[in-house]
Structures are given as structure tokens and as C-alpha cells.
Length: 60
Image (cartoon, rainbow, N blue to C red; front, top):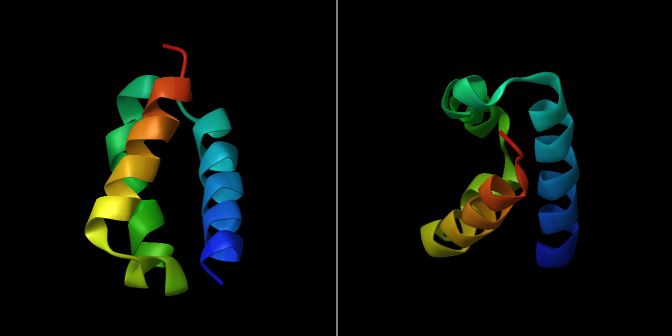
């Protein structure tokens, strides 16, 4: 379940990042978080680590 949730989150986030400029990431993350269901149940620390990894992959 956690692995599926992570892959689903990673895929969805990458799709969103592909559509926006770097300055819009924070706003989009807010909208994206509002749509999360099961992923929101993950603990905050894990989510933060994943988000940090995703941010480092964004080329500005």
C-alpha cells in the first residue's frame, strides 16, 4: 500500500511539475495536497522527505 501510494504520488506530482514553472510549485503543491486522499495519511516526515527529493529533480 505504501509503495503503491508513493508511486502514485510521484507520478502525479511529476505530471503537475511538467505543466508549471518553478515559481508556481508552492501554489500547485497546495492544490495537489488538497486532492490527496490516502497519501495524506502518510506521516509528515516521510512526505517531507519525498517532497525534498522531488524538488531537487526540478530544473529551474
